[in-house]
Image: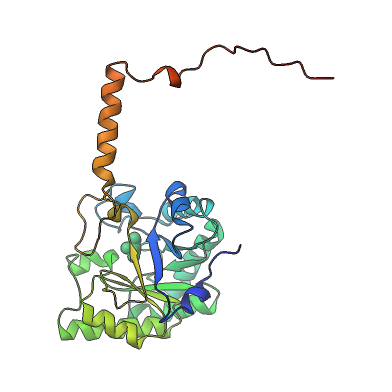
Length: 274
Ligand code: KIV
Ligand code: NA
């Protein structure tokens, strides 16, 4: 079976909700592959996998390492890789070189980039040259140093209309879908109604054409999670309990048990016929 493509996701505007999650490594990607439409190798891997404070220090090389791992673990979902901060903003040409390298070296089907009107020319430049682009407006974490905080966006009319303009510009530039992050529900509803491509919400309300969460956050592995995260599991405490039990059993010599131990071979292997 062929993978889901960016045009197939684009064609689902207003249809069945698009299901997306992040993944950064082969094993979790394999678990997601039969259940989601889109797997995002997000630059949130900087925090989740590498312990960074923000996504700002994430490099193209890091995105490629994790993008390849996710591609190896999957065969069905559309894999989208984030363009990291500093690798695409300066010009459409820079963005194309980075995006092309990521698609060539990972085999992923699309890239995502952050920003509204100021990135519209870049989105058009990439799409015209064979790079499917997922947009990302509202809260854009790569801009944390100018934004100053990770609080929700578009809660007053002035900011709401700027976000609406951003979303329209990116959709009109040819993005196949648009992530809207941490925005007030009325803005999410208006963007979704007014743009031609599907909106994928993260803290964007049920009005969106699809939803995405960071996998580790929804599994209960995240340290601090935003209001918009629902925890579908509580793996953090479960893992800690397992590790504590293992530690105790090793110290008491209760692990390994007899069933975990290799003995000598009891039966001689028959000689191969020559
Ligand atoms: O990096 C990421 O995980 C993202 C999603 C939260 C949309 O950009
Ligand atoms: Na991201």
